[in-house]
Image (cartoon, rainbow, N blue to C red; front, side, top):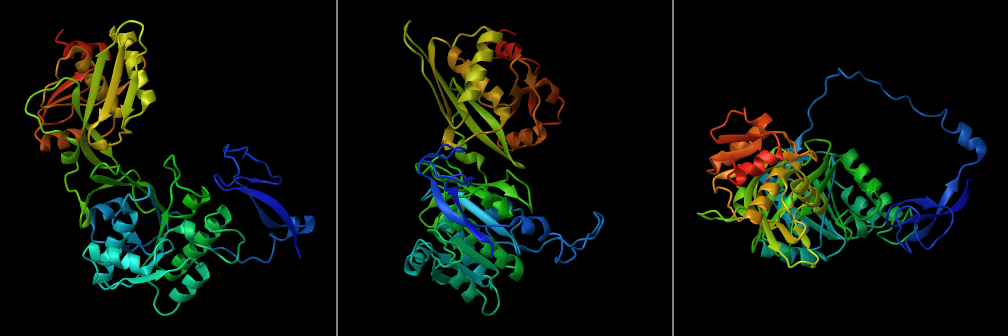
Length: 457
C-alpha cells in the first residue's frame, strides 16, 4: 500500500508545499496553508505503473467528420448569446460574481423557462433552504415552474438522487464552494474539496449528458475563488458584473469551448428579476441636445457586439504647490497616466498642475484599447472647455510616439453609431476609407487631432 505523505495546500492559489509556513510563497497570502494527506508512489511504482495495463486510445485525424453539439436554449436571448447559442449537453459552466449581483436570480429564471418548456431541471442549493428558493421564485412570478429543488451539500447524496431515472437536462449547483465530498478530508470550500466535488459533478454531466452550471464565489479583487484548476476543468466561464448602485448587469464570457469569448449579455435589474436589454447603448448614453465640454461618445466592442458609451472628463486647475489628483472610474488608471504623458510630451498640453477626473457613464467598465482617442478627446475638451460636436464619436489606439493606430472592427463601430443617429466619426487615418454613412475624419497622429479639436486647422 502506498505510504501517506503530508503536504500543505494553499487555499488561495492551490500551490503545494511539504512544509507549513505562515505565508504562501507563491501568492503571498497569510494563514492559508492547510494540511492534506497524499499517497506517495514507491520508486518501482513511479517507474513502471503507467507503462502497461491501460486500454488503447482511438486516434483520429483532423479531417474526421464530427456532428455539431446539440444546444439547449434557455429562451433568454442575452444569456444564450453569451453561451454561444445555449447550453451544450454534457458541458460544464462556471458562473461567478459579487454577492447579491443576481447570479441565482438569473439561473432560477433560466431553469424555470427550461422546466416550463418540458425539460427536467434540477436546482441544488447549498446556501439556501428549498423554501427560500421557492419564495424567490414566487417573487419573480415563477412559482408554477416544475423545477426540482433540493438543499444539499453532499456530492454523494446529490449524485445518488440524480442517478435515479432520466438525468436532468440542466443541473444547477449553487454554489460549488458549499459542496462536500466524503472521499476527501477537509471542510467545504477548501482547494481539495472544491476540486474533488467539481470533478465528480463534471464526470456525472459528461456521462449522462446533463448541462451542468456551477455557481462560484469571488474574492475581494473580483477573481473566482478556489483553485485555478477549476476554471480549466469547466468548458465555459462566465463573469457576472455590475454595481449595486446601477441598474444594469453584464454577463461576460471569459472562456467558452463552444462559442466566442468576450461576448456579453446585458440585463437590467427590476422588481420582477433580470430583464434583457435589447439596446445596451441606451443605458450608457446621456440624452443631451447641446455639447458639453469633456464628454465624448466611444463605440466600444464587446466580442461581436458594439456598445456606445459616454466618456466624461473633468480638469480642474490648482494653485501652485498643490498636489494634483487623478481619479478614474471604469477605465485603467495606468492607461490614463500614459495618455496624459503623451498629450504633454507630444502635444504641448499641460496637465501637471491640474486635477484630472475620468468617468465612464453608467458604471460601464471599458477594456478596449480603442478608447485611447476618445479619452484624449475628452481630456482636451475639458482642458480647453471646447465641446466635441454632439453627433461625433471617436475611437483609436494612441501610441507613445503620438501615432494614432487603427483598431479592429471599425466597420461594426461605425454601423452602430449610425444606427443611433451619429453623423461623424473621429478615427485613425488608416480606417478613414471604411464604407460608412458617417462623415469620417482620419488622423495619423495625436498633435493633428488636438489641433483639429482646438480649431487650429
